[in-house]
Image (cartoon, rainbow, N blue to C red):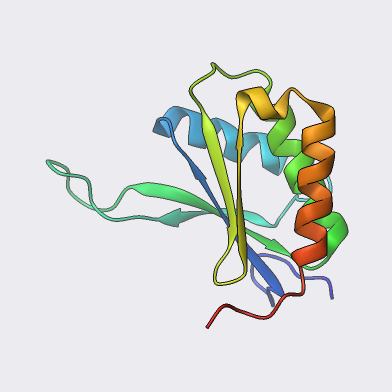
Length: 130
């Protein structure tokens, strides 16, 4: 099933970046340039931070309709991480189904990225956790 950010989301994926807002915004721009992800990535408002007014943006929400798009997402995040400093980690999650973390060291190892993609694709249609 194909979905866009305004339509159905068979696999709504949230992405959290453990560093700062600049890195999250940079990842957002990076993912929007990916042809298979274009139109499927948006910022998700977060909770207000202490001492600020309004809400921050803490997560990226990606609407994916196929395993192929999820593989592209993980590969793209790994490519983005390759240009980051070593303390950046990205968490990719389908709520109540699965989550994975990818850090700079792991992203630089193509075998680990491939294994991560295989693991996610194998769990893609797992039922939600109770």
